[in-house]
Every structure is written in structure tokens, then in C-alpha cells.
Image (cartoon, rainbow, N blue to C red; front, side, top):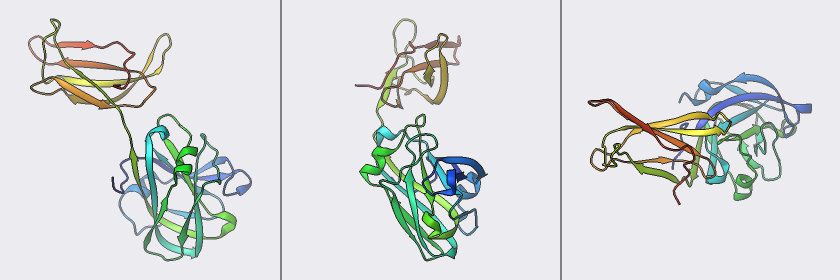
Length: 239
């Protein structure tokens, strides 16, 4: 993989309980998602000091992650020093146990935080995503940031199949949509994940999914006549 903003969901500034760098989230200060992910490094999107800190949500479930790196562009400096990256262990709580320290003493550079296996193991599952916090411990550093990127590698199992007609013969080039079951109800609640076109020769399709989740696949083809069908809603990753 390589550094990008592709897997970043949100970038937000939060105040913390007691203003401690490792305190629980308290109040949302500002949504910096657009500014911090627009590719413009030379702009001050957020100031990191004792409070607030920056929360970065990454759209990858923790159980699948093998490598995680997070880097911030240090556009300008108020006070040079260190800053800390911490894992969220649940929706608003971080742990300093395996924090990753970054050197924020030279402006106009990317500062990289390489997360250890222990750091990754602490990440809480926030609904097929994780979060990390950049914060200043005891106001060591005060930094103005312009961009954030992540480099994340994960093992993603597949859910695959073949589109067929009512007689069981292969039906090619169908639109195939994947839905995740987020509440088994009754009635069930579905979340659309993505769509693709099944192979034009074999009718095969394959989606990247997450272990332990259940899915339904819906397919359709604009033909003469229009045809459509759905699988059972208990599909899981291929074994």
C-alpha cells in the first residue's frame, strides 16, 4: 500500500475530559475533514495543543489490519516538540499504553507515526472502522497541521459467486450489489456496500468483506425481459 486519504472517513478536533491528552472525548470542536484531506498541505487546518486533539477515523475494521502508519503535514510551528498518536479503544476513549511519539520540530515536512502490533491490537471496532488521536502531552508541542494521510494494509476475505438465470445457466454482465446485514431484526436492516458488473464470460463476481458479518447479494440485468434475483441474507466470507 501507500499513503493516501482513501480510507479516511472523518478528521475532527475534539476537546477532552479534563483537557488531558489521553482523556475521553468531550465536545466536538470542529470538523476538519475537507481541509485535512484535500491535498493542500500548505494551509493551517487545525492547531494541536493541550486541548483539543485531532481524531482521525479510518474505514477499515481492526481485526483485519496488519500494518498501520499515519502521517501529518506540519505546516507551521507555534511551539516545537513532540506529539502523540493514541489508539481509540472504544467510541470516545483512548489508551496511552502503546502511543507513538512524533517529532514536530521542523515545519514544512510530513511527520510519520508507525503503529506497533500492540497499538493495532488495542484499536476498538467502531463499526467496521477505527479511530486514532493526535494530541499534545502537557503542551509539549503546539503545531499547525495542513494534511493527514494513512498507509494501512489489511487482510480482506472475499465473498464470491456466479450470476445465473432461473434455470441455473450462467447469466453474464449482471449488475451485482452487496448489502451487509446490520440488524437481523425481524425485520432485517441492510446497509448497501458496493456494486459491480459480473464477468462478461463467466458471470463471476467477488466482493471484499469482513469476517463475522453476514451479507445478501442482489443482481439484476436490463435485458428482454428485465431480470433480478437475490441470495439468502446469511452469506459470509469464503472459507
